[in-house]
Amino acid sequence: MSVIKKYIGDLYLTTRFYLALGLCIVLYIVSFFVPDMFVAINILLLVVTALTVIDYLFLFVLGKAPSAKRLAADRFSNGDENKVELQVKNNMLFTVDMEIIDELPVQFQKRDWKLLHRFKAAGQKNILYKLRPVTRGAYEFGRIIIYVSSLLGLVKRRHNIEAKETVPVYPSFCRCVNTNCFRKPLYKLSMATNACARLATVWSLSRSRNMYGEMISAV
Image 1 (cartoon, rainbow, N blue to C red):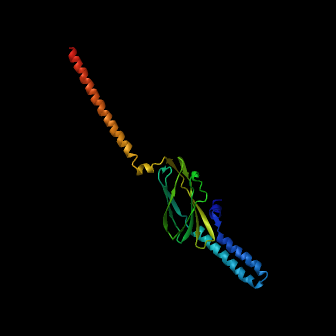
Image 2: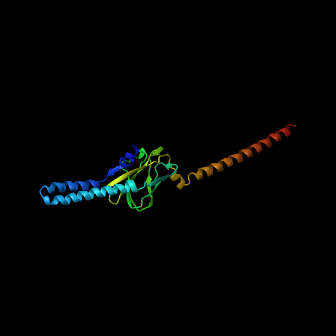
Image 3: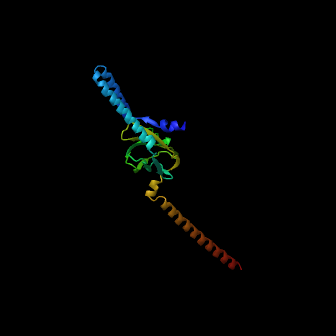
């Protein structure tokens, strides 16, 4: 079962394949009226079939799975743009096209989010995108799904890369950092605390001196 899933379960036919097959069907219909075309259409169908098999062998037999990693902050700032980086590497020895889908948290409601990139042989890219949460809470990322196709583009292979993680979203701290609102209150609080401590010390010493003076007067 695992062998079938490995070599067939992740196989997807592309739009280019269906267009080529549809062209052959149309030409076969035309060949009923022009019989001289029949042999040429058979050759065309054999060429399409051969290229499809070659494309399949490149992706499923000779090809290696790409590697991908998501880099995100340990927390997001609510209402601000938060950067997320994908490090993707092509481990194949030929140029490929990749359709990259990062399973975003459900809070964003982005069902059709995907990135299209072309990678050279053994090439690597750092892909940066931004997310803007509008509610606080725990945001759960899912897998990184990559559809790989060669330059022939007749078939593509799906790769699922586990990258589940949970990122908490806190009230906007980016603006606080930019305006130093974290440092100023702490600084002022420290000054106020020290001032109160000094006043309490002065008041205590003053009271002690008064009590001491009253005791001497009484004697």
